[in-house]
Amino acid sequence: MEFNEKDIIVKRSYKTVYKVGDEIIKVFSEDHPKTGVFNEALITAYVESYGVPVSKVNYVNSFDGKWAISLEYVAGDTMEQRMRQDPAHVDDYLEKLVDIQIHVNSFRADGLRNTVDKRFEEIAALKEIDPSTRYELQQRLHGMRRHTKLCHGDFVPSNIILTEDGGYKVIDWAHATQGNAGADAALTCLKFTLQDPDLAERYLKLYSRKSDTAIQYVQRWMPIVAAGQLAKAESEAERALLSRWISVAEYQ
Ligand SMILES: Nc1ncnc2c1ncn2[C@@H]1O[C@H](COP(=O)(O)OP(=O)(O)OP(=O)(O)O)[C@@H](O)[C@H]1O
Ligand SMILES: [Mg+2]
Image 1 (tube, rainbow, N blue to C red):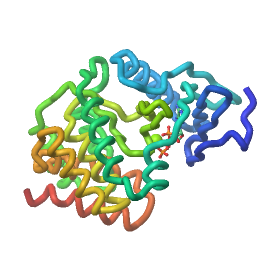
Image 2: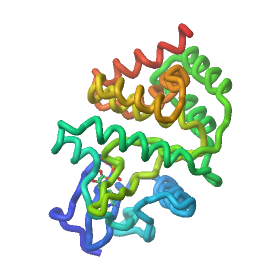
Image 3: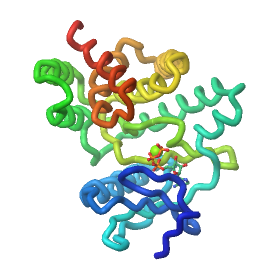
């Protein structure tokens, strides 16, 4: 397989995404764990099997010592691109995003890890926060009921492709779990907050109304999902905001 610079869609520190013919190939860096690559492919295969509109996984292979996943290329724009191109209709897109998220959450995710277990281990491994805060967050997690809903784990506009026929496909399933839709909504809200707090507030109100979920329930997950994002923070400002969200757990 030949990889050319001109075919790059996205380049991150740990992976490069190419479009080659009708395939999207994510090539991971040499030090990226092999288990992570196979896990992403397996999760995607599970999600396909539930009948969710996704970009299907073709194969996992290694090229020049680097592990890679091939997925079906989906023609269209991401919702993020459409929101940028057409700012007057951001609220219509937000409504569509919430509808798709509720649809995703309506599937039962047999075979995937539970959100509570995944978050528990994530927090245990987090050295950026002190042990007492870690304990508080883990206690909070213990209090959460275990659900079986499909949670995407990074449900943001750049992970939804709107197709020309008016349909959509959801991509990027590496973080999907079986669990509580409230955790999924909390993560989406957090990502919107980092970008535009006003948009985040509108998202949360819309999600609450459309899914008939109390805003307080989503908010209970905020410190937990914020902790999970801390290790991935891209700036000091982002780290400061996440730390503020996490510390809320100490006072409730
Ligand atoms: N199957 C696909 N079909 C078409 N485009 C895709 C597909 N998979 C990924 N892309 C494009 O590549 C981009 C990055 O892919 P992916 O979401 O897997 O990585 P990412 O690092 O999470 O990027 P982002 O932060 O933009 O979501 C997507 O936002 C989308 O524009
Ligand atoms: Mg993505």
